[in-house]
Image (cartoon, rainbow, N blue to C red):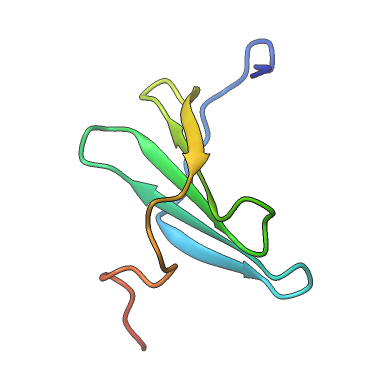
Length: 78
């Protein structure tokens, strides 16, 4: 993974972002161990994708998402 020289950390709230044009949904989650998970849902050739960022904001792992839905338990209708 390429890192921007002197790149700053950026904060992103836990949320689900749907891009209606592409049909891709991005789900940002803070994990109990201090890492961050980004899950990409859509019509990808090998299934949904998941990227884990370590405590320094650097990519720690990536692979096929093991979760089945982009509707987590904390999501409630308002």
